Image (tube, rainbow, N blue to C red; front, side, top):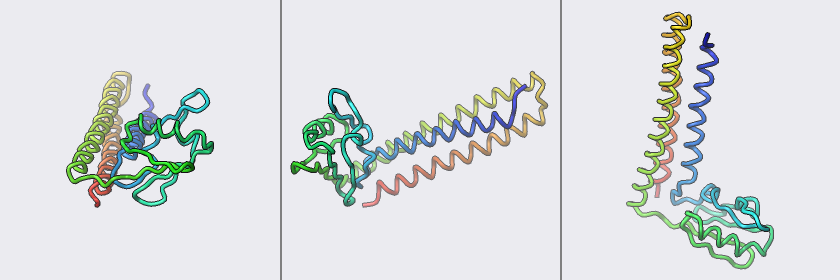
Length: 186
């Protein structure tokens, strides 16, 4: 027989994972403010293997309009610049021999609207994922009635499932609202 409490806890965990993934994706969206997370996907060739940028250099955000990258090995500057140019960051690096600087341009109004739409699409995909998890668990609960779960317990579990779903959807909406505010702030 199905363990209702454990099933609901697992469901909430799956939904939370979807929210965490959305947070990571939103952090990579460049909103006109310097954020070291936009470099998370950049991989640099270092001694014959591809490694994340943060493993070969120190990344800092000295001000809201720039990112500073200080390689631990000065010989890596060329490789880091190449990796940034080849990535989808879309910013041309400048170096002075010791530090690589990325100047973050101010996005136009049109670009801000595009970024907001992009974030909303990510949010909608996350909501669909969460709804799918809810639907799967509802199906499990319906099948559990045949295996001996009482209908009252099933109804209570469905109500609890809906509460969890609503709580997680509110989190997604709050994340999207905060990101939209960040993007639209000049």
